[in-house]
Length: 203
Image (cartoon, rainbow, N blue to C red; front, side, top):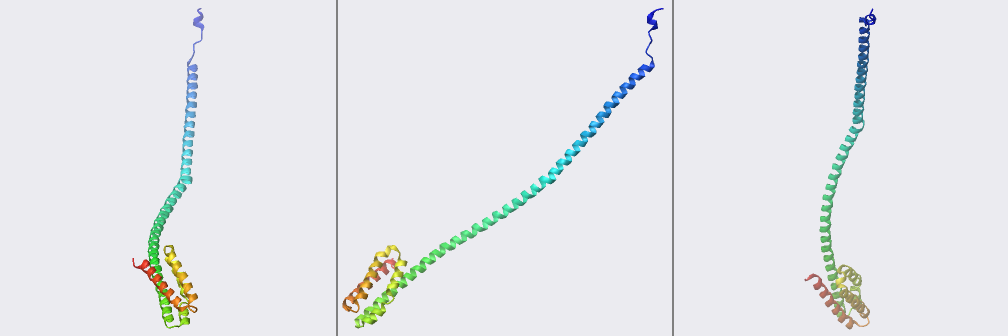
C-alpha cells in the first residue's frame, strides 16, 4: 500500500480553527483601534476644553485690562490736551499781565518823578520867601521817593538818579546854613528831574 495514501488529510475542523483565529486577531485590532480612537477624541476634547479655559481665564481678563488701559490712555490724552490749552491761556494772560505791569510801573514812575519835582518846586518857593523850615519840610519824603524812582527806572538811568540823590543831600545840608546856594542847587535838581522825565516819557 502506498504511504501517500496513508497521510491524514486536513479536515474541515482545521480550516475553521484558522478562520476563528484570524477573526479573533482582527477583532483585537479593531477593539484596539476603537479604544485608541476614543482616547484620541477624549484627549482632543480635554485639550480643547483646556484651550477654552486658557482663553477665558487668561485672554479675556487681559483683553479687558487692555481695553481699560486704552480707555485710561484716551482719558489721559484728553486731560493733557485740556491742560495744554489751559497753559496756553495762562501764558497769554501772563504775557498780558507782564505788559500791564510794565505799564503800571511806568505810570507809577512818572507819578514819582512829578511828585519829586513838585517837592523841589515847593521848597524853591519856600526859600524864595525866606522860609527855610518850610523848604525843609517840603523835602521830608523826597529822598524815599527818589529811592523808589531808582528801583523803577532801572540800571539805564542809574547815573541820573544817583546825581539827583547826591544833589538832594547837598540841598538838605545847605537849606538852613546857605539858603541862596540851596536855591541854586534846587534849580539844578529840578532841571535834572525834567531831563529824566523827558528821557523816559517823551520818546
